[in-house]
Length: 425
RNA sequence: GGUGAGGUGGCUGAGUGGUCGAAAGCAACGGUUUUGAAAACCGUCGAGGGUUCAUAGCCCUCCCAGGGUUCAAAUCCCUGCCUCACCGCCA
Image (cartoon, rainbow, N blue to C red):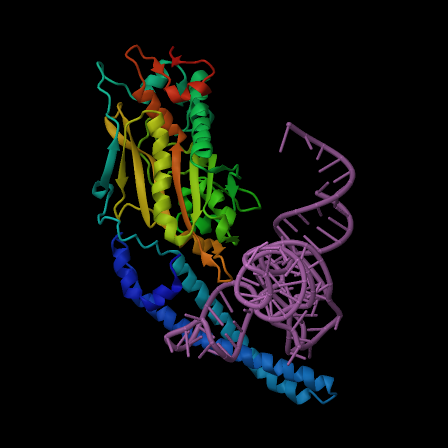
């Protein structure tokens, strides 16, 4: 959520900044609602004040043994007027809040202009796509060839966009997640957390998935109103919802390995082949809570931590800065990491690292207390994939395939593979 | 699932329906003292919002959440959520 004060005092400025992401702010409606709110709120508060004064008067009169009947009569009218005012104020505030919650974050000034992913800006590349003496296969062919990646069985037991992994393939998948967690906790200073995979609506509102993107989520049946998490970002970031942390505890850096569940509504027909786009996948997530002035440095650090995984796995990749039109609803700035997939002869997204500034923190009321007795301030939140495990598996399969159909194990994963050095049929 | 107890400020913890936004303690912050620190002493010290140039004043809201009773609710009533204890069941 944007700062309501900014929307009152600098509405046109905000509207211009939001235009960078192709969002048209309805300034006329906002101005009008705000105007109404102001009058109504002042009136309501005056009536409340009046009511409080009368109640006190009655209390004193009663204590003094006076007749309170005339006082009671006088207060009656004020009371009914007040409850009318309160009702319409509440309705108006709900309406205003709904509008505010639906406005996306303002992009950072360094975010390039542009409408689609074609306008994203390549920041750097790392590693060289390997030359193959043969036609490189894609991960589906590689996996099915060794008989360890099975989409048909998954379709039978669940449906499309699910996979079954077997034997060393399942182990490789697990090894990747372990390797990522170990690297982030031991080398990058992140604390591992294990969190619920189901969350309540407040948490989803906090990180920005609700109210606008409910159709992307799996909602559970039952009397509790819970959703499956679309990313660990939701439970991990919400750990600090309604909290005030002392400044000296910052930054807080967490990493978490969770499954992610996404309905993929709206992406029907896209990436239907293979493991690239599944309804259920695993991800090792990085989350940071930092002081506002540190958040862009923190974003660089978070990005570097994600990149380190690919470097250790010796997988070629590139980093792109998302343009205004391509960044997510809650983000102020986002870098995507795209890994080279020889089977597709393309770079494909494997991580997305974002700074949300205080957008999520305001929704969550996640704050810190600056040293000294100053007021609590909103934190800045960041997160990024470090990395998407399923897509990393895809990248390993395609980049480490051999002509005979076998797959070599990247050196960094050997300690996790229990002696397996190669996967073959 | 059953029974009982409870949810109050950063934390612990008092609170008879009417100057209670709330005692006390801890923590924090400012100061005195000290070569410095500790201790001691004095003082400050919840959050959100409105109005405003104002982080000045004034005002409003908030004692888990949502309803209700009342002129007046942290305090009484109902519902929900959560926590703790014991019992049952269970990975």
